[in-house]
Length: 362
Ligand SMILES: *Cc1c(COP(=O)(O)O)cnc(C)c1O
Image 1 (tube, rainbow, N blue to C red):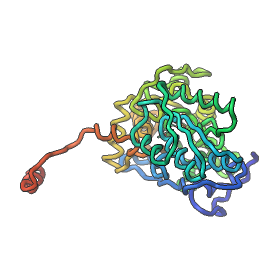
Image 2: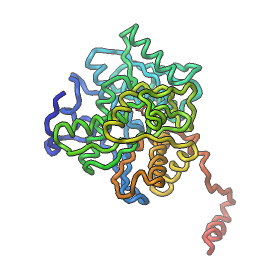
Image 3: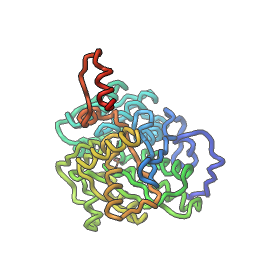
Image 4: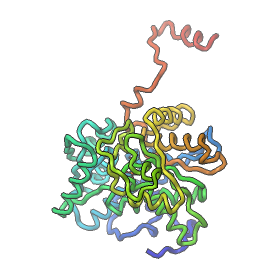
């Protein structure tokens, strides 16, 4: 696609379809829940940090941005059935947009490994849920095989290029609201989103609408870090992880389908990739909630955990404008939230005054 200089003042509407002239493909029908237009929230503690809170999307994750475009494409091309392998958020989003578009949906999930909120959403939206006794990577390759052999079902995984087209609007919203930041930090699982966001910036750059592209920084969990390790060791190709493990289930992926694209985005933007431990992820999740009042799921908090490490090692300075993409809502994973340390006190209601006044030292 040749990119024309974008005058944002000429656009109308809010959210993903505000940028319809910049989204490739033709759509005879748009299946939308008014996704996108998510809040950009300034951090209270890090002076040049902004959180792009994707948990504010209709099903609670950035997946909705891609799903509106991919399901619109499915409907415009006459498909009646969609299928998606998922660690959870793709399932919730695919199920919702399938309903909205009047399609049947089949969701392939690794049994026992999907966060409760995401499973519950898929059930509510009425998807057929198929569980496999294996991990996400196996679920994904079976969807790819199904699609190659039987083209009657439309695949909604992140090898679907229309999803990435929708997700790139995160970059457009950041530019409109803030301009071009120095760094954009993104948690990386299948590695589509970091590429999609870079693609958004890069298209604006090639069109002459912005004069530079931010450094794209990927964060992976220690137990599922093929891309971060490839960047660290300067490999041309990642070493896949057979049994990925992390509390951040949305990025518990050992064989990221979009690894090539992600490495390209990181390299061309002079970015980097690092890992965060489960402990660092959970600490970052609490910090976000208890200091900034933002509830993000563990995978999203990994991006903040990564920022904190880069800040303390001096690889990023606190003068650099940094956008941390918080990819999903905390409610997605109630089991993790409820295990956080808490002050919970059982009291006889008659003694409430004594308890609180005593607690306050009054
Ligand atoms: C899907 C997802 C990711 C990972 O995005 P990829 O494009 O697969 O790298 C990160 N966080 C959340 C909450 C997600 O749902």
